[in-house]
Amino acid sequence: MAKDYIPAKIADFRLFSDHFVDLVSQKAAAWGIPDTAKAKLTDAHTAWTAAQAEADNPDTRTSLAVEKARRLRGEDTTNIRWMVNTFINPNAADAITVEDRIDLGLHVKDSAPTHHPAPTSRPDTDVEPSGKYQHTVIALDSATSKKEKPADAYGVRYAWQLGGTAPATPADLPKSEFSRKTAEKFLWDPSNQGKPVYYATAYENSKGDIGPWSAVVSTIVP
Image (cartoon, rainbow, N blue to C red; front, side, top):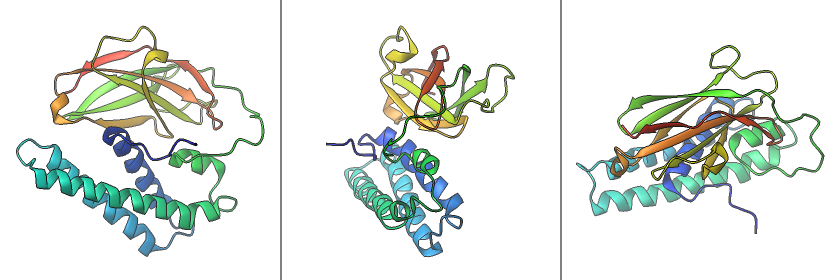
């Protein structure tokens, strides 16, 4: 059975859904998605993020708040699937390209070999605290020290590990996520405050081939 494109864990779902909804909102007009459909998607996502923030906050966390967040996450997931099945999949061969689908985090059938080799460029990873329980992880072009992708990169593969001992190599980091962006926010549960976090980045081409990894950067949840 194919792996579901929607992550099961809340932290992974947050990264996926934030990016999915943001990208659909930006491209809705170009992709022929009606304003009413875009609003249905974004409203459900906004409702879930607000409810989840309340459930994550020790000052407002109650059994009712947790149940509300769980229910609204289900509605958010349903709306994402509805958007994919109603507007994105039927349009995949037209306005929405294979690269768009990869950027959305959707599965793509690889029926032809890649004509582009894996990136040879290696990024430098920078991590900045960007709020309570939150980091911004940045992939810097090692040749320019700027937040920009080199010519051989389609996007960035972010890898991470929460807690535990430092991994021996970036390949040992258990979690990863692809993004077209050179900076991504990671929001952690308040219960993880003070725990170590390890991050690394690598450039990736449009077929999912990954280039050299950066060094592993360690920090703590602020």
